[in-house]
Structure formats: C-alpha cells, structure tokens
Image (tube, rainbow, N blue to C red):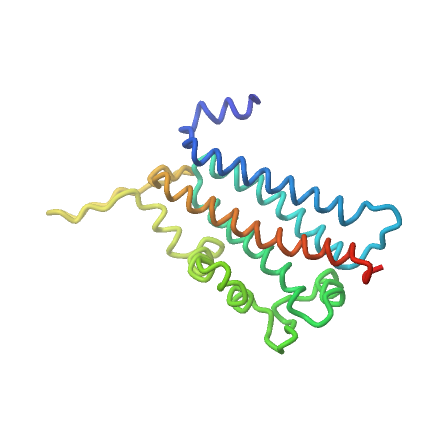
Length: 224
C-alpha cells in the first residue's frame, strides 16, 4: 500500500467493497484500452492512419480520466466525479462519430487539425452535435440522454453546485438549512456511487466497441 493511499485512508472514510470492486474493473478497462493501442500501432510495417492517431488521443484521454475519476470516488468527491463522467461520455461519443461519416480518415484529419466535430456532418447530413451523438446511442444505452443532460450542469457552473452545497433541509416549524463547504460529499449513499461507476463502465464500453471495430478493420486484408 502506498504512502499516498495510507494518507487517504487516514482522512477519508473507506468506500464499500462493491464500490472498490467496480473501481478495480474500471482501472482494468483502462489497461485493456492501452493494449488496444499496441495492437493498432506496433505491428511491424503497419501503416499509420489518421484514425490511429485519433484512437491514440481517445485512449490517452480515457486513461487520464480514469485515474482522476478513481481518485475522486475514493476521496468522496461526487461533484468532480460527475464532471469527469461527463468528459468521459464526450470522449466515447466523439470518437464514435468517425463511424457516422462518409470518410472516417478525413474526419480524423479534420479533428486532428482542430476543427470542431459539432460543425461537421454525418453521412445523412446531420450535424455531429453532442445531442445528435447521444440520440445515435440511446437505443443501446437508454440511460444516456437523461444522464448526459443532468451531468452538463456539473461541467458548467450551475444550480447543481448549489444542490451539492446543501447538506440537509428541514421544513418542520421553522425552516432550517444545513450547508456544506467541503471537498467531500458524504451525504450520498452507496447506490449513488455505484450508479456513477456503472455509467462510467458503460461509457467505456462504447469506446471499447469502436476501438475494436477499428482494429478489425485495419487488420483485414482489404485495408492493406
């Protein structure tokens, strides 16, 4: 056990076994993503495509987000954990956009050059806005529209941050409100942490699916 983790245990309550189990699975998912990059980039003589570089960027962001997310959950910081989940959804959705355009490598080129994805169009002519990408995935991930909308309030300063600063409200007789200014969000029960962790894993599965699709496509005879 590291010194950092010992300090954390001294200052924070320990998350439940179920929460820690899910965190372990999330960290394993990140390891799998990094292995995908080895499959994509390292075969001797394999060409490097723009989509390879976009995959590299997506996996790098996924890896960084996973580490930060796990730290926030273990330190009971729900506010930033939710903001990081929103970022994580953004990574998976925007990488998947390459499969909804006529020319995926041209799409990747444009993204790598700094062009905005929400200004580009799908093969059907729809703008690749985040809202449209959510719609494209909601059949296989029914939770996505509602979660995406709620989490947007955690990325931008909003009423969501006031709600997290309220510890309790009592309306009996005289109205009273207990406020909290802390980096810990201990009022959330175990199921709230499990919910956000399961959403994180589900979001990783979207990125996982499209990374594997690219590996299969790149390794097929038609791509050589």
